[in-house]
Length: 124
Image (cartoon, rainbow, N blue to C red; front, side):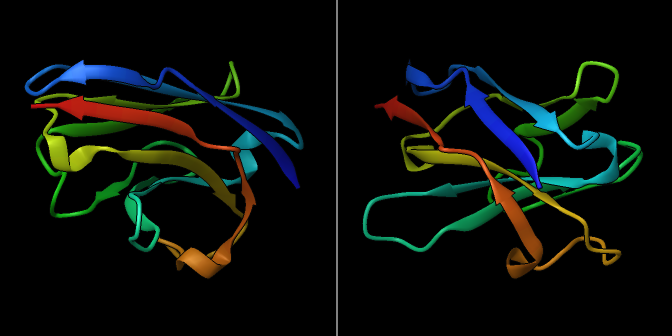
């Protein structure tokens, strides 16, 4: 498994931006499909988006399309989530996760390495 550590969360006003980072260690991160997920209080964890091993393919949840962008720098073993035009409903704990699945995008159950999460709070 790969070890994952998220950073970059915080409090931002609606309409603002944040960039989350996910640093990986252990096995080479380029061998993993990487995903960002979020979980709001009382709600199930949901996928925000996923990026392929090379970074050439991405998929996003409809709720964040056009506002969020996932990228990765395999040389730095880091995955990013750029979040623009943030809304109060984006408030959640955000997690990055890694999957060795050959399926793209993987199912949430295919992700076997998870970070500890970082809180994002968007005020209205």
